[in-house]
Image (cartoon, rainbow, N blue to C red):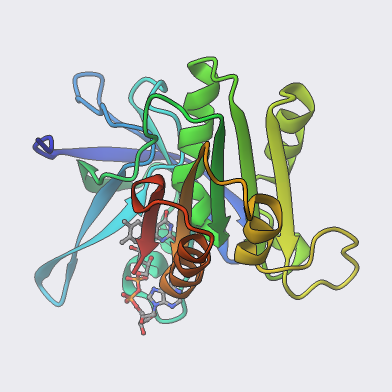
Length: 238
Ligand SMILES: Cc1cc2nc3c(=O)[nH]c(=O)nc-3n(C[C@H](O)[C@H](O)[C@H](O)COP(=O)(O)OP(=O)(O)OC[C@H]3O[C@@H](n4cnc5c(N)ncnc54)[C@H](O)[C@@H]3O)c2cc1C
């Protein structure tokens, strides 16, 4: 049964610009707050809009092991109410939030191949999941296929590259759809998934996160590849 959400005020203790339109936020909760969640889940941010309550979902980008801290990764949407509010926040600001929500979590027991596919800020819940898998000493093959338009938009790039050097079972595959000087993979994420896993989907679980069109295209590709529905897991940013 889904856990009942809990409501807390959090203080924004750190804000880092990852790109001109994406920021990383660290939220700190009071010591007595129960911030337990499962890697991959999201919280709701509660604001007011025109005098009425207004809430929006944001995936948690950090591992559940951080005590009383939660990290978010937020893209500024042009004309967007809540994302613009976030971009106006300063360190020390307070946010009213509720958590946890969602069923986009890693299935256990783990398959031999855990295939994570993200575009843009869709990396947020996947960052939480991968950090948590390593904390649990997961030795399975972890694939991260991360699609972006330009090479300077790869969120947490240093972190992924460092982790891939340290962990031989992490296969970090960034792919860029509108490259300028990029010499790596240039295909869309679903094409990379097809190239790697067509005909060898038996021992793999697939996790996708991003905007609706990408999720739809990836889902179609996985079904075409005869991946059973129970091995396909999605979080769509609507
Ligand atoms: C489960 C879940 C988890 C999510 N996690 C994250 C996350 O980790 N990081 C994150 O940045 N977002 C995330 N989102 C999206 C987030 O909830 C908001 O939809 C997003 O921030 C836009 O809200 P807004 O109030 O700024 O825009 P709104 O005021 O709702 O929208 C303004 C305009 O922008 C359009 N629009 C809305 N969203 C987008 C978009 N993403 N790209 C382009 N155009 C858009 C709308 O159609 C509208 O025309 C998540 C969504 C869901 C459902």
